[in-house]
Length: 572
Image 1 (cartoon, rainbow, N blue to C red):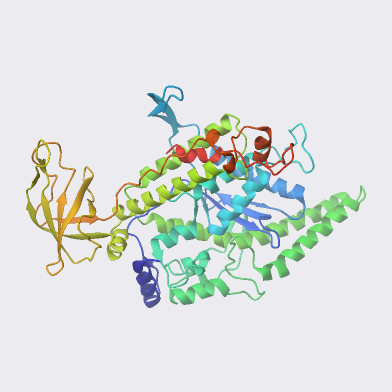
Image 2: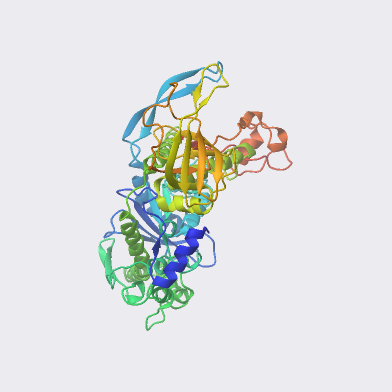
């Protein structure tokens, strides 16, 4: 944690309210996001229990698994999930724009201009916290290879036709979520903690209700909301508010307050359930469902109608119970979106969102081309490319946030990586070592910051029309001045172009880090990978390993083939 972040948390403890960490919004927010609140069954990692999703905060859709141990019911649940999510994801693929680009001929190496399709917009999925992202990743991993009833050899427990496609989309979204600055799949807790600091620990910030308790909000939430066309009541309390108590007291109340039946007033849905809810509500409800299903199976012709009513009643009771613990988190996610929309968007948001649009377009095209699902494991070259690309994106996001937000730049100034001050003198000077003299003016800046200003170190002036690099020529600690020799960004004339240099009295900011991310060293193509890192792909064993099957020639399995999902990261 940075020094400024620590100070903001201490101030939040003193004031009892969340303190800002940013003056602008650093993540893109869609006009029509898809909010997904998943719920998992206890005792089995990634086992779906329910999911609430939708693009309308007043009309959420709910899908449940009455018996999580039943594979058929589990796949029926995923089919319903896919029926609601996939149309939203696919709806952005029709409207495109033509973008000029260059393409390299693999034989001659010559570049030619080409037109590429870029989707005009892309979907955005919002989940409550980071555990929700992990759960969607597990669902994608467990479903994208599933055989369906339409396959020639469906095998046991065939999945509905759209379930593997859902798995491929979830895998792509969760892979993209690991790219710094991406906004296709976002956890609400991560969004809020990037822009505000609370007086609690980072672990406690993963409880969305406790996190929101540090922000002022209405005194009470609505007791019911329509779910699939009907209204489900749930208990409410003042634990989710901070109108009276401080943020710490309100957060503690949101985490622990219970009703007269011992149930949490604000269940976390994170995506695990509360153990007391499992014991007192969920387990008996599933038991009644199992008993009703058994009675229906054993019922005679005259009793089947009544037995079916008992099954429907058991499913309805389960639906009401699960909706009651999902609705508070559903409303919390939308409240978090309201808070984030109060911040103006950062200047570089459109640029990063264009990268997400390229990622979405690339995955859409791979699905249309009939490419196989993403493999379970990356080969060495693909893993290295992933890592290098994400490192570049992290550097780019850090630089862009510092340029967009004075509070982010203040963290760099406190760390000695930048300084801001007033220009006190500009002296013309020239480099006469070459054939023609080049302008190398000296700019002296008086600053109260204490940067790591070593002589000869490069510095970069921010917020200029063209990149402007300088070199530190002198440092006077007693006077608090730094003299820089400007090396570029002044035009090609013998004298600097008007406006390219700061004027005395003007406030300027120089960074000691580069304003663009450097490209990493080129990596070999997968075909040129040495055998020590997986060997040339394309063999039968390699292709079988990509699908997760054992080799047919004996010996250890070959490494997986390069995943097609991460080619989207190269589109940027």
